[in-house]
Length: 511
Ligand SMILES: Cc1cc2nc3c(=O)[nH]c(=O)nc-3n(C[C@H](O)[C@H](O)[C@H](O)COP(=O)(O)OP(=O)(O)OC[C@H]3O[C@@H](n4cnc5c(N)ncnc54)[C@H](O)[C@@H]3O)c2cc1C
Ligand code: FES
Image (cartoon, rainbow, N blue to C red):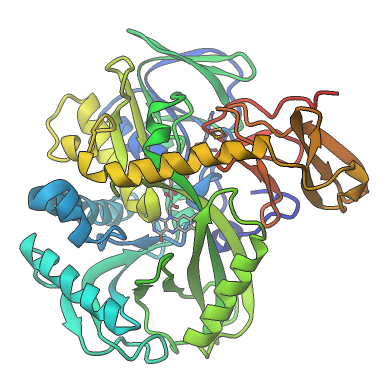
């Protein structure tokens, strides 16, 4: 997997040999076309191929080349949204189903790894939710009560967390969570999918969908895949312009991989209750030096495109890590990625609202995309095989949850507020003020231009207006990309689309 210039580099990428796949060069037809080669798309494709369906998977980049390779790969049904809140939003039965579905997703990953002999470092570990002040201690008690009400009775309140330096206050102890090496898993899953008769085309970007009795995905090269059923698992749907994007918000989150002396931190998952929260875990045998383990620490989330100096987030994360884990030594990896936060805390998985019955989406992953992506595989397979699934209503993308109206309003007012960028002046007045390796927004008459200066000092200009719904992009200095603050579309320094919902590039700069 290639490292983009200036972009950060997740720990997983060094360690795998992806299956040999090529771009689509002709027109094909199949039972199911799956778009997106992350955990959601690949799990769905694999499970459908096992059911005997002829499945074709299309992926713009490489297997796992989207957010899946940027994960920290906690496998957990201790949901970030907290069951205290989920019970209010979905009732006890809904919260219980959510809890069970994520637990079953972990079981599914374990079963697939076993059935297909995928050596992906899967391990069952415990999880700890730690309080660091009395107010948070109170929240732990509330959460424990909610868990008992939905029947998750083996979670216990412990007086102390196993890592003394993390907190001296109580924590909730969740048994039977998990962790794995995501890229080893996805490589094995892709190989197993091909073994079960599936076809994968990488480097194949879908630019248009024609849906109806039969669906067609049309690639940028003009080739087509015609299929009875279409699954769009592109992290955020690129086949939907509006509806879903009002119900979820893009957040950038940061991670570092830091050496710690072997066995100095117990092998478990750790989360705190800050807003944004920190998430921590161990990866064994990854540093290339047997004396060390790798501690993977994530956090410092903010709305995409709405932090002036994203590099500070990585610095803050390292600072926090050194305070809470004083045994931390050299930082070997730094990276960031994007998650979509649904307004009511649960993913949108199922039939695409307002589309024909045979079009499915999986999105709204939040910090639980590994399990949400696996739930997508199980649930969409059941829908396509016309089997009942107890989770279908809970994850229905068309659901309207009036109890989350406050969050819906807050996120959409935030999007509306981004329109102020049309009125403000630019960050620079002249392209020459843009330093090599950076990007800045410049006003040009009534519009705004994104100016990137490459390492050789050549200035490149394109429109700063996002082709999705017209917000003004902003420069992400950590990833060297233009990020849209409204619904999370991202573009490379020259304006080429990297992440939807936009599916076209930034336009030319108007003179
Ligand atoms: C730093 C970080 C830490 C995280 N930690 C955790 C964690 O500990 N546990 C957890 O469960 N989750 C975690 N997550 C979330 C999780 O990684 C994601 O939710 C999950 O990987 C999303 O999977 P996906 O298959 O939906 O999307 P992706 O992996 O992004 O896959 C979508 C694919 O679609 C492709 N695509 C897009 N548009 C097109 C198109 N037009 N044509 C063809 N292909 C297209 C993309 O190239 C991409 O490969 C984390 C995320 C980040 C960023
Ligand atoms: S992503 Fe919606 S306006 Fe840019």
